[in-house]
Image (tube, rainbow, N blue to C red; front, side):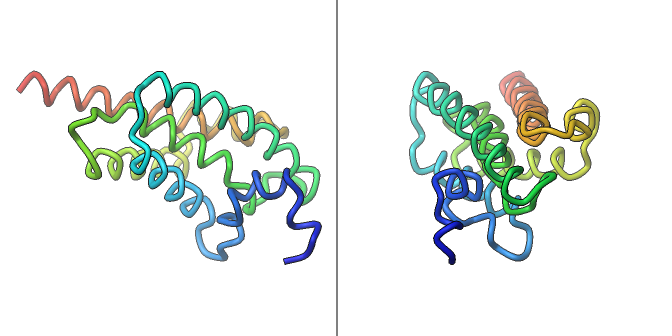
Length: 155
């Protein structure tokens, strides 16, 4: 790895190098997010504060990655990290690893198939667009998880 690869913006953009994985780097960034979320399992307040931090870092990382590689580079996975974190935040505490796995899978499905509004943000040619399509996918996954928890609770 070259010294230019170790700039703070590049380290954040690639989530400490996860974006350099040659096959499915976005999935790698999402796995790091889900794993960290599962390991920390903090209160909703702490997770919300962390989410805001990840969104701010995400915008900075997306900007740095776009400047370095152009477009929506595959190396930039901080957007998947932030989107997956949003999905994981909806998982009820009793669901454990299965709930986090469901959030991860749902997030990746929405991120890959890009239904509206994910596709709307994906068409934006900016750092905000890079981040917001994954935020939208994370919110969609969170809604499905929340609906599932309501249905599960009603049975």
